[in-house]
Length: 113
Length: 112
Image (tube, rainbow over all chains, first blue to last red; front, side, top):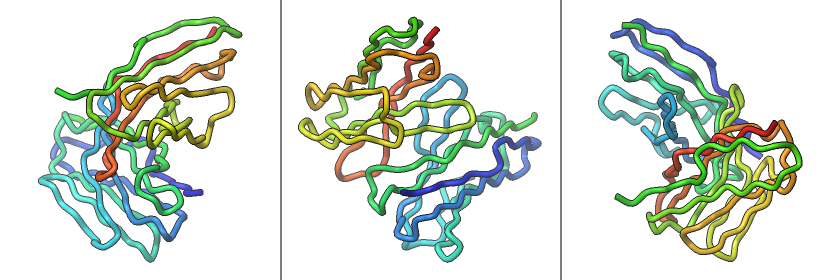
């Protein structure tokens, strides 16, 4: 099955700085990589995803990059704001499919005003 | 708005008791999932169902069972609860044409 490792487990940045969270995966057939954000006391919600036919995807201050050769993908948040403080989870498909994923262990991001 | 709901939201029970957590959705999605969340361990898949007649084990199904009573309802049961099943439980749904999973608000379960 898929094994997803996520680093760091905690990350503190000053407001306005950038934050980067990295994940590695084991199954070379994996082709879909979502990122979920979970605010304190709330449910996880999808914030961005990328498919294996592209190397980068951006949505305003958030971007995801994918390196299929090295089997890792990263979430980049620029110009961080206090409302970016949350736990972020990466995920990768199980057995190459789309509908079942394995989640990383999460990164708790704290943006210091 | 279409949503995923879970009941109860909080539950405290004793070791050995049978517990049922319920999930309902008005999104019209065929696919439903149960996860548990523990600090430092992320979200781990317990069971999933791709339609009413389909039930599949996830990575941590031991000690749990599920029932898909209808397209909109997916229940998780703990036949004999034990303390290490204390966790936050999430139900999620997705539609066939999309990969995005929509989570319910979660059920915090404490087993004493």
